[in-house]
Length: 215
Image (cartoon, rainbow, N blue to C red):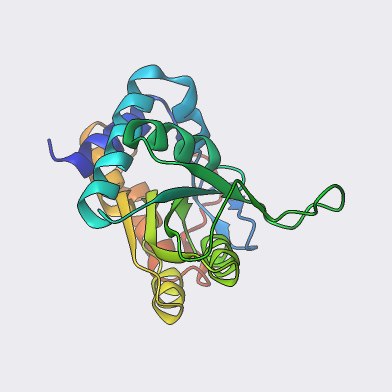
């Protein structure tokens, strides 16, 4: 089993993937989706956590060997950045979604000197909005953002275009296609549900994938 398929398998094993075409989830971006991936559940399963954190560390070593610091997105990327930084013996910090309204009013938590070569750790990427905000905050602070390592990506064209427009290199441990292949093979989902999710990913504004009742 390749690394991407193994990560997908772990997400399915811990039931971090929820499929609900009859009652769509609403993402922070407002998009209605038949699928939701809750990577926070990784932290409560030792096997999945070890697999994922070592894969994040390996991706940083492979794609960004010059990395001097890991920065997590708030809030889901923080723990993963901390655990992977421990494996890599690198400093870490995180970027808030908005600056604190008290104390030092920080948006970036942790010491970050201008010119530091940073890799951002994100749990998942859909439209790319949250990770782009994180990268831009780090750039404004003088960091050299080498790129992003994320656990999962839906592979939505809007997200791919947005990252490219901001010159952000992303490497995801696994993706929707791998997840669906593994889910169908293990009978976690039915083939018609797989087709619904693909239809959603390819055209999120077309809601014909919504089913009237639970299968």
